[in-house]
Image (cartoon, rainbow, N blue to C red):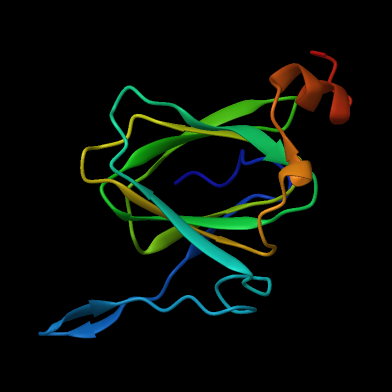
Length: 142
């Protein structure tokens, strides 16, 4: 995953693989790999290849996304630039900070995308319209 052009508040987080001839294990712990207290974990699976998910930003929420199986494409937009990257490595996570519009697409049939979040679900925390997002971040594209 390229890191140099990621929006502010986003970064690639390498995850340490531990294992032996029996297989591999990756642990994600709060304040270590996840730079926050983990309040919620969810995962997306069974998503068709032509489906687009996400299509929102968060006001305060920070998330850590890992494709634990398969792959998908994550588009990140800070109101100035848009970057797409493929999540396809279970030993690499994507940290997504607040005020970043994100969309997931091009899911492989076997994709399982796990997301760890620093807060419980709260609908008022979401910015669901792209134009509202651009206005919120003060984008010249608004």
